[in-house]
Length: 438
Image 1: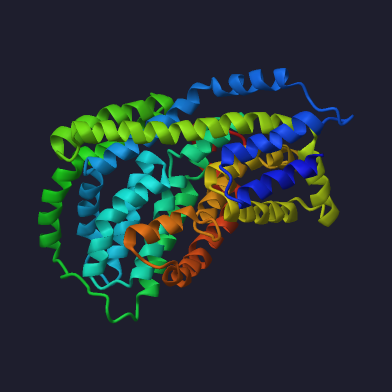
Image 2 (image 1 turned 120 degrees about the vertical axis):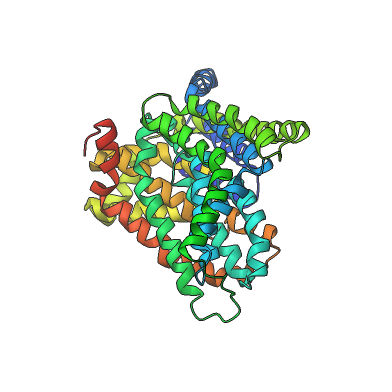
């Protein structure tokens, strides 16, 4: 019966049925036809389990970070970050792409949301790219890839959900993806410069002298101080042990409102209300999804789906590193079919018992999940971030595909190998900060 339930889930997703409804449909099949005797399960035992799972305080951080991202977008906070980064990177060929990449990394370190990062930084950068002669397909692909740095550089809403489902420390999961996030930032910047090296249409900004850079930095740096304080407050309080991620997310919201309204004057009362409404809708959809998947994951455990999947892996190889490769392939395929949150909520209950059985650290696996969900968001046919970038830049998807494949090959594949097969490098920061085991 578990295999029929999986087929129902996959078929519903492929037909475009909303994700929570797809989860509920799969759960309903198991409730009525699952169990060792085929007589199903008692719904009265599953509904309270879902409500109990949803009572976690850490889930409030998701709503707060979504609101913070909306406030930064409407409050022109991202624009000041871009202007300051441009002082150092804007004078080399392809440097404007580096400006966009680094700005996405900084913005993502506050919001942890790819779509919010792309909407804010992309809306500012796309006109600048066009003016500088950048190919539209390249810039759309570049910003789609760079916006996903918010899924690697903490805080990260996806990893909050992963920690909630797997019972791990949110901070440890955050720290596990820092090295991968920095690596991907550097690789995207270098790949961008390499891909544009022979393009004659790309204009290079006036090369500034050291004196001009310092003078411009004083002006733009001063203007950017309120914006730069946001990642300092969020990450500093989390890593310093002063606040939990939930408390830091609330601090980000409280800080972004006056900065957007009174410092940069981009946020109005109407904009604040719209931001709260949009964030409420997004949060509500996520919470319904989490409630439905909490019951479905419980049914998966009762049906011993992790054991069946592990047996399938063992039929191919008993080497744990080979199985890790198969797990990565499985996550990539899932990422091609659905969004990042759906992938995490669906696969974590299945794969986490397998990870622990093989002797891998759950924190190491958190980094694997972080990179795979990022890769899935730009890999067709689903590729929600790729399509959003195409809409924002008014670029046909066929023009984006070639540079996107280059970014995947040169940036995401090396990062995936890095996190999957060099766990010591991934676990270094969690061990130093939290004394987690290697």
